[in-house]
Image (cartoon, rainbow, N blue to C red; front, side, top):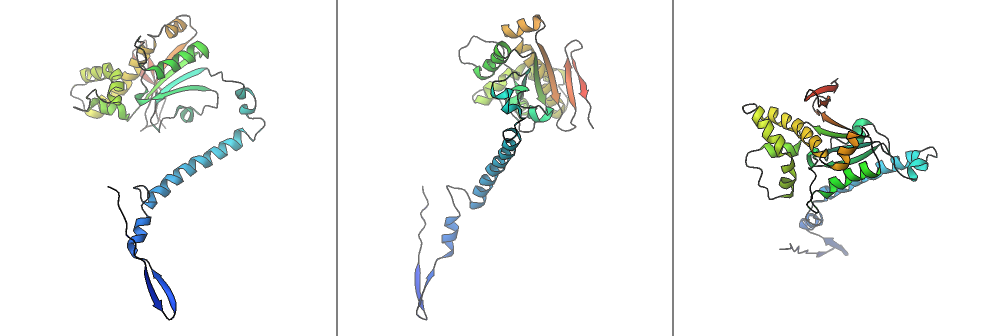
Amino acid sequence: MKKVFYISIHLVVFWGCIVFFIPPNFANAQKSIKGKSMEESLNNVEAVKILEEGFRRFQKLHFCNPDSPYKKELSEGQQPRVLFISCSDSRVDPAILTEAKPGDLFVVRNISNLVPPCTKEDGSYHGVTSAIEYAVEHLHVDTIIIMGHAKCGGIHSLLLPGSYTGKSFIDRWMSIAKPAKILAEKKFPNAPFEVRQKACEQFSVVNSMNNILTFPWVKEAVKKSNLKVYGWYFDIVSGELLQYDPIKKEFFVLVPSC
């Protein structure tokens, strides 16, 4: 039901002057904009303004500069060497973490950095698989990095008892990581939740590495030594970066913490 505000405007004659008196509740009514307070609306505007100012700096650096790659090779097309698959989490932007330049990475981001297995089901997981196909078959990348991270919300929810119903889009998507969950619970049945979550986050990276090799064009490129697949794990807490060793079947420290 829509709220209706009644505004009473009183005319008061004072020494020959007409004075308008507007009740205080009118000011409160004006603070409501489509269900949001004026403060909330301003915060939204400020958030967009920050992004706009960031783009202005980006534009000045890359489009007002005649030596910018956008003025040269990038305006003609892209030739990235790396397909980087990472989580949608706002804390793990691969371009920022690696200080990559425009044109360096072909990036795929999704909840929990998952790669589904190759399937013939029409329309299933097409966003990720089509990006992988494009990167390998058309851009001819020579490196694929799948990066998981600590404190992943998707993996956290997957491990919570009773949280998985299979009805939501997130549930169906996270079902890709169920093998990692099963393995984590099997190896660490009595461990604290945080230990099982970290294990599941890492096992999920390995699961996605195995899944990506089910795509024929990826498998063929790897077989011909034209493509390498890496598994990374970024520890948000310590800043440490781990890499998976497929021979030893374990993660090792690639970049130690400070």
